[in-house]
Image 1: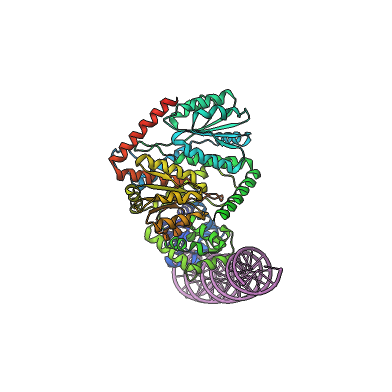
Image 2 (image 1 turned 90 degrees about the vertical axis):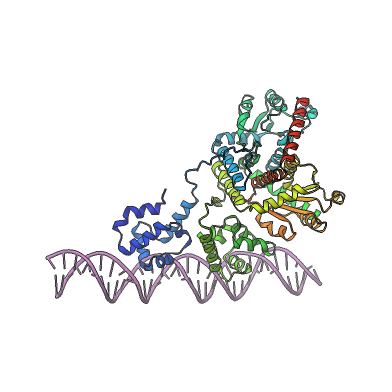
Length: 283
Length: 283
DNA sequence: GGATCTATGAAACCATCGTTTCAGAAATTG
DNA sequence: CAATTTCTGAAACGATGGTTTCATAGATCC
């Protein structure tokens, strides 16, 4: 797909004067040169005068050269039609390379966020933002991410707690929850057996429930009346990647912050100050 | 691999004044912007004056801004037009959208792994694989990721320990380390004050040191004889993203596993079995 | 072949960019 | 708290870039 400048040139190419065509030709050949070079240089490269360059851009309908450059820059920044990144083949025993890793991660991120609906994210953010307290659950391998999510959320609102890994203490922890609270659960395949217990509890006590999970478990979560944030996590070697999970955690925290507006910012600055003090004290 | 400008910035980053760092930061985040924008614009984008911009380039050893731009252009021509995913503009007050989040994450991942050299990764993996014991350090906000990294590494080899956040207990912890051990540190900006202490210790006791960090701190780590795994972490709102850090942790763990070959696989299965048993017991 | 029209670059002109200077702000030191 | 140093942006200034004007060369039309 060509740039808008290229299209305009092609439309009007025969109406242009010979010198203008020389310059136009050059621009078609090296479209990226517009971003990097001045009009004077473009003119020199194609062997015409600065005046001709100025006239060309005007003739193509731009007000001036700056106009051209701005449009080119804008077009570069536009993401364009998102290119679907294919997940690499499952070639067993094949060594993992850096480019392959990148491709896998990109593919998972792209799939995850291209299918994430804004309204679902907002719904989840709203429940976390408005809850009295927020409980974060993540067992086993997901415990690390759960801790990070707790920190991310605690940065933008108070009252965020981690549910311990030890099932024995749950009754105690749950006893202080109420229907005004929210529960955010991170659970990937293989879906730990304790998760349904937690979700069932949340359902009966009318806790608002948000589950960050992978496609193979999304259905189970949905059935527990949870808001599901679905993350693609697969890799060609049979591990799973937590990258998209973390990224989802971050966008969730961001959405909560956005929803809380000033309050979140105040809290963030407060925490930054405290962190600074701790730094100074320890250093 | 980074541009020459980026390298110069990393070398001298801590010598720069705060405003200069702001601009330098911006240039590291959006290296291609140098080609497309004027120095005035670069200054405006990063919220400093034109004067500061002029000073920065001089301090970095260039004769003037034109010098910078010429070098950047030359480098672009040498490496060819890299398919760079552009980092979205800093539009203050603009709401964060899902596509934007995706773009930011993709841009960071792409930059991170396109400039990650296989030999550097392998060198790091080798040290972690061959070490007697492995110590993982991550303070403050990075503590969460450090825990995850510990788990990832512990899955493929024994003897992986987390260094506690409490500086008071370090002497005790360090006392059991030896020159055959490896230290993996995760530290992002703002570079916590305790990190240099840890790295200096590692250097004197001949610990093999691997540091996962961001471009603004890479220079500091390098100076401590550490192997540096550089991660791009910036976002248009002024937070940082940990996604690329996690992804780097995963590829490192993967590389270690690859290097250990069968041993790692055996251990992984062993752990999977144990996990299953725990599941059953608890469920 | 003269009159008219078009195309073109040189040069004048204006706008913007980049550097330097300078005075005040901020941090550091004694 | 004063002295000093460092940092910083506003403004002055010179350089470069971009546009417009204009004289001239070539093409076209009677």
